[in-house]
Each structure stands twice: as C-alpha cells, then as structure tokens.
Amino acid sequence: ACPRPLPGTYAPLRTGSGVLALGRDADSSRQVWSAAEGYPGDPHYREYYRDQGFDLPLDQVREFLPSGGTRTHLGLKYYRITDPRSTRREPYNPDVARARAREHAAHFVRERAAQARAVSERIGQQALLFAPYDAELMGHWWYEGPDWLGFVLDEAAREPDLEAVDPIEAIGSTPRAAEGRLHPSSWGEGGYSSFWLDPSNDWIYRHLNHAAERMQALSRGRERRGPLEMRALAQAGRELLLSQASDWAFIMRTGTLVPYAVRRTELHLGRFRRLADGLAEGSVDPAELAEWEEVDRIFPGLDPGLFA
Image (cartoon, rainbow, N blue to C red; front, side, top):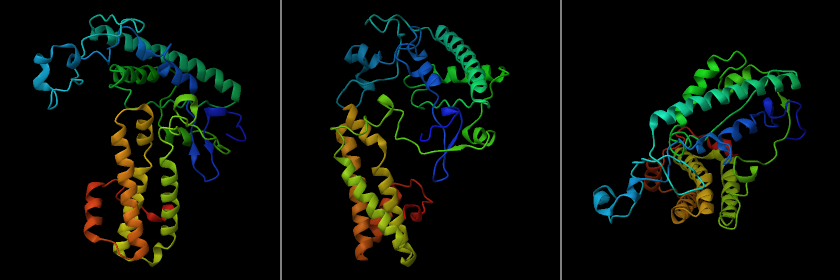
C-alpha cells in the first residue's frame, strides 16, 4: 500500500473509496501453501493423484466411468503421499492422517500465538493475522484439511493470546484504520496478476474493458428507462460480471478445459452485447431476456446504478 502503514498487513487499511482491505498474512499462508514446508505435503496424508479410476483394470471400473469409458477420478484413493520425490506410494491410514492433522493444527496455533505476541509488541497494537484459504483446498486437494481446520479452531479456543474472529469482527475491534492506496496484487503466483495476464488469455481484456465502459455509459441514463429496460440493464450487468470471472483466464493459463473457458467468456460477452444493443436501439427482446434471467440467476438484487 502507499503510503505503507506502520502495522503493515497486521491491521485493516482504509482505501480511498472507503472500503476496508485486509492483507493476507504471509507466514500463515506459507505454513499451508508452501510446497517445501506446507502441511498438505505430509507423507501420511492422502495422495490426491492416485485414484482407482486409473489404477484398476478398465474392465473393473468401466461401468462407473462416463460414457465412452474415459478414465477419470472416482474418489477411491487408497494411498498416502509417502514421498513426493518418488512414484512409490504406501497404503493410506486415515487414523494416522487424522492424528497428523491434529499435530499440525497444534503447531500452527503455537506459531500464530508467538507471531501475534511479537508483532503486537512491535506495532504497539493488537495484531490481526488474516489467514484466508481456498475452499477448494479443504477436503479436495487436501483431504484432511477440514479436520485440520476444526482442530485449529479447538486449539485457538484454548490459546489465551489468540482469538478466532471473522473479518467484520476483526475490523470492529481494531483502532481507526490507516488510509492508503492498494497496489495491484493477487494470491497467485508471484503475488501479482501474471497468471491472469498471459499470452494464453490476454486477448480477453480488450473485450472485457470495452464491455465495462459500455455498461457504465448505459447505467448513467437508467432514470429514463422503463421496467423492461431496467431488467435488461440488470441482466447486462450480470453477464458482464460473469464474463469477468477470473476462472476463465485462470483455466486458459493452466491449459485445462480451455475450450470451455473460451466458450463461457464468449457466451457472456455475446449476451451482454445483445442486451446492450437492445438498450441502445430500444429493441430489447422480452423472451430472450426472460430466458437469460432464468439461466443465470446470480445477483438477483443487482443494482445497475453500481456501474454508473
């Protein structure tokens, strides 16, 4: 942030628009996400990539596979990570894995308590350690993640120097937030947006930016529009937001299901364009609008004025 606040990421930051921002705690993140020292890589945890959909003979699993017999994950995973540097895998023991999750939770809480004490003394106020994690991590990539999270909350409840709170509670219990301007950043590789702005996906942004500018212009004259046009304007906002979803650029960059990501981007931009043209020409198609409202019900109370 600029100017850099004295507490760093250990307190909320008030932006120029009045929105309060919380910075992710690097130490809490590293403890979980680091490929070298993160908990999910423990040898006793379940191996995600070894699945009986691939391991068993095709004749034994064919009836459980999609039409055509294409192998895929069935959720039957009998092995533990063992050694990430080797292809050898030993049988998974859920009791041992759960015990490791408890140990890792205790370690995490001890580390956070020590960190909170040190940081609070240094900055002269109670430190806020903001530790967000992808929901996809817990239970999907890291099968024992939900157990670990539950144990963390149990341990934190017994730790006098820590209190688990949600962001709203945290903001309400901290002193007046410093003001500053956020630098562009993300949770992705390198801490910047390079994953979402890459030769594999950079073609989408001129279209997204043009649509955003057009939505802004259309929203400014909303007071003169009738009920049908207001519905169309709101749906145009939904289509814009759906086209801007970071999932599409992310998928294009990873190279998985690229045609799907391209199709979704083009689909929502195409719908937006149809709605915007209808609003500009006074020719909104009621049947088409109703169909799209039914297909994508996201943000039912969306206020088009937010785009003005």
